[in-house]
Length: 283
View (cartoon, rainbow, N blue to C red):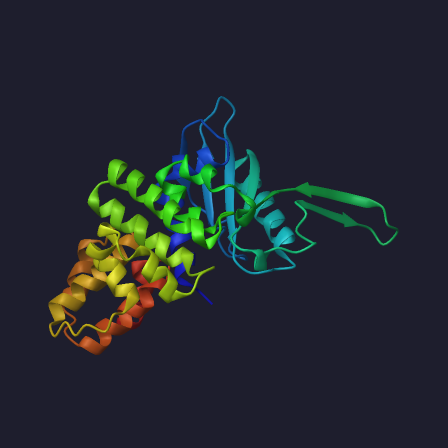
């Protein structure tokens, strides 16, 4: 099942690839490349091409719940990406909350023959977000900042953390980007904190209050009363999560006047990976 944070975590590295490279300790220029590694497996979360003298790939995988087969899956992605692009691949697994951890997630995959002889060893890098100091993200790039509330911080210290985030985002981000970053923060905080607590904590953030995207996700129950307003909500949320819509997508949405259909699209936009997938059932 797709969750809102799935879309958020696919688009943050896409919008801020250099920030995520910096999070991994990579200073070289990077670019997002196709994450579809095979017709027989789902796409990896996000794949960055590292432009060094000897190019390589940085593979980012996000995990919010425990998966005993995660190590094998990351191995599969790593090998397929390496074969496809003929470069070395470094895999980082960002575990978003304690529920994702387990004794089996050691950063190493070992396969043995029935005799017990080991014939394969693979290493990946698990990052337990809740064990990181918030300073790591507060001092990093804007693209990783929305994960800061999921780091090692107590509830009483959260208001101070949010204030520091406000200062950075107000100083460094244009209004549309600021709204998108706060929307990502709200969605990701839902992994650890209840909705009412998060709403209360972020209530004073100006960019949050001004964000149509945030209002759409909250589903405040406001009756817009007009198809045009509902269309704008779908376009705003979709642009944040799925990227800029094509003229064809805009024309398709512009022809929809049924408020029930538009509401369904608004609820579905956080569950899909593309505008094509969102509008597929309308054909």
